[in-house]
Image (cartoon, rainbow, N blue to C red; front, top):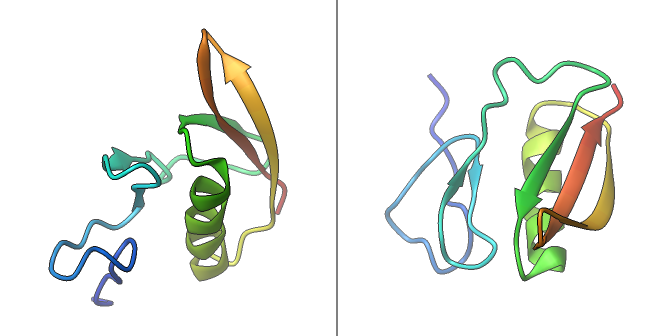
Length: 84
């Protein structure tokens, strides 16, 4: 089994695969069933950091993804689509 990598520079000991923490709160992503053409909205205030962390996950999974900054249900965040 591959050892998970830390989420961000401030996470020294906590490891959570398929999760991000752009604002310091861990968001678990259900990526096991995330197929090509599907999208997911991730609420976040630090949009740049959310996209950076999502790009790391996408690179590890060899996925191509597209991002859009959005407000959905009165929440700011990032919607991302799996393209490949």
